[in-house]
Length: 432
Ligand code: DLL
Image (cartoon, rainbow, N blue to C red):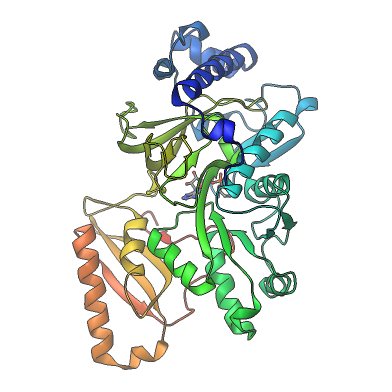
């Protein structure tokens, strides 16, 4: 199940040679075409010809979300608008969105990378794929859409919302592949259960889920409920959208489309490039983007990259599932806490469902964490000793993993908010 054998199984030395050639191209391209980059590179005293090896990338200054915002909307575009055939924007909720533009070549390359990650997990021309990402400025829906069409899948562009109708199509069309966020896959399952049609009236076999974190434990829950094989894929709008990386059937890391992206891992505090195999912030340089090229984009996502070939036969580097975002990391009583650590603990415990919320408050100088989690069976709330022992069990397991005392609140089934896009599980009340 390798879509592009030449690119996905290339000898590493050949791949690195290709990356170097493309890196030189993109640095030069930015310098020649985007005044903002030229200034930045001049200030850092880096002329494009300083890039002689891949590791010379370390001389190039980082690009951040603020750089894109400061140049809103089109200030970092490298081609005239008549060559831009599509724009998207980030899904961020605060500040100006970041806007990205695609040339025809960019769209072709995007479809190619998405085709690879979808084909790698078994999607093909027999797939009937329901795309339950919001169509619009978000890159998720249209990104997956064209990649899936490229491999010949039947695309059903249902978008988000109207979940009952979504499920009707799923049954009637015998949809076998779902594209959505993990949280929407869970939500759809709840709605499906309530709709009263037996679960064997659905035909889902594969979940191509992405756009938000999903621990292996949460993935197991989704697999058990829908009875489908769930895979993870990753990307961000600034680097072009989904397609940057995705799991293969081995699910032993997300294969990076390395002919399109050069990835580094840095220390998020110092910006220093870390040794291969270290965990840190992912920095991405897209190697072919023409519309809005980027140099060393700081994703804020925390992961680790391994360069060992995979059992599937691909030679491309793999990244771990995203551990969290450096800006999502909670510091509570001096302890660093990633929401994903809490999710892993919760998902391993019986009698509680996959829906939870983390509430952080400040009392005086002290931060506190409350973990609200839904019971699967509300009647448990009336059984004092059972609820007490469940409560203590969760508290102890959280303490063992996080090293801090969290308040645990068990709530009625279906009392926490549900999400159709990315879930918002952290409610930080510290600055209110
Ligand atoms: O979420 C692009 C995308 C769409 C990827 C569909 C995969 C599928 P943004 O809205 O710009 O783009 O959000 C990007 O979402 O920096 C991560 O923090 C997070 N994210 C995306 N995919 C994953 C994933 C799209 N598989 C931000 N696991 C990124 C964990 C993810 N986090």
